[in-house]
Length: 171
Ligand SMILES: [Fe+2]
Image (cartoon, rainbow, N blue to C red; front, side, top):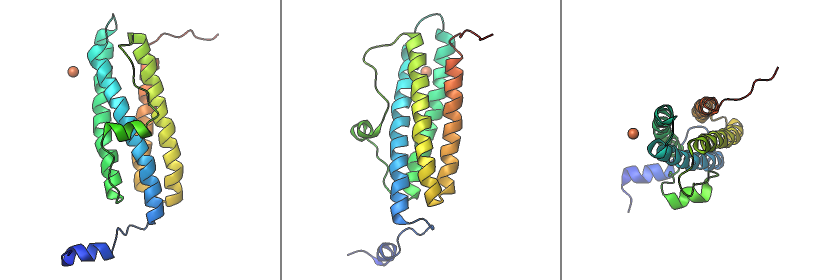
């Protein structure tokens, strides 16, 4: 038997002005963002450890900055899911089902690492953009705020990484 307070909570579920259906839709999107972020976190940390070559010092440092940011983002995304009343997925098998980010087989070259991380950061921006649309419908400005911060960060990360590879200027 639930005690008095437990019974109260059961009768009065989360009441923050967003319908249960919309909360679940937002959380589904956030769960995919969490999965993508976790996979990119691991990939970026992998590269921080395993990068070799004459860009070692710069890349080792850039990768560290980016995986540390991802680590704190993961926590914020998971806790937003909890604040919206759902449980956060937290196992690699669940993440694998949801993520669009592919794992590597073997150790890529430094340039391949840069390319893979640009692609991973851009994947997250795309996932995040889809969630903004869902949040707009739900008028969930708090999640939008979090998502926009993540988009800003991942667009910037992608630019920083792209800039490690020289490109020809047009005339
Ligand atoms: Fe380290």
